[in-house]
Length: 308
Ligand code: CP
Ligand code: NVA
Image (tube, rainbow, N blue to C red):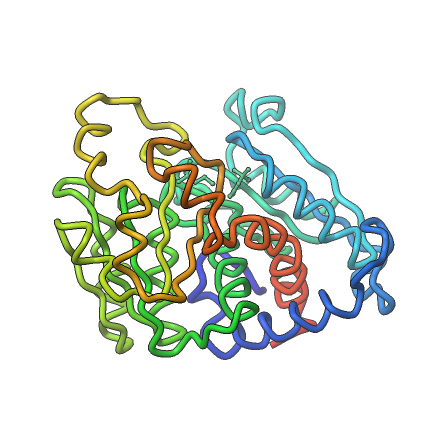
């Protein structure tokens, strides 16, 4: 069973195959109506069940369109409206849904819940974001960087801000795809040390900087995300600690001259990034958002054993 709970479930070779497939599929359907299935409709007749325990715009719509373009259909369920919300276990939910649908995508809080879902499902389970990680987002980020001329091995990626779920998956990707990460974040808001240790063991250079300028200097890519993730409190002391890590034009000027800016969105303009950067010429955010669709089609094909 191919579950996609973290990027290491697939590994570097399969990720490379997925990125290549995404580029091919994207170009093969250029200019087509978005609802028209790909010519080979490789997942015709398949149903993706999606469970959302948190809000979503991109993940929800891009996965729905992804399965449609692959020839399949979807069922989208709000976790709060399921019996899950009244105490039915994740394990029993996994067993039941496996009898109805061909794959499950779940967005939830505690990562242990997606692991429990995968342990008891007899169909592939895909992580659509947990408090720990966001692997589908980083597939789209890597696709966007490759599309815009970057080669992943040796790339210098700078992260500015909160050490959150998105950063954990970036660090994991660094170990698998051989790029380096400079983390600029305040003390007390660091990312998960297990991801950093694993990436370093795999040969990536991951450094932690308390000075944002040091993290950004010469970097090929600057990435940030909201300072307050879903489920977290808007604590004033956290916002104050994050303020020196805002990505503004002065910070971008320290990066490589052809550096790009990424943000998974939703953005909090004026907090983690200024309008001038996010709307500026180095920003790739709209391609990045679009690429959630293309990258996830390849993730689905991998999960169904049709790729990698
Ligand atoms: N980037 C991302 O996962 O967006 P949504 O929360 O809108 O799905
Ligand atoms: N770190 C953010 C990502 C949203 C896509 C969150 O967890 O809310």
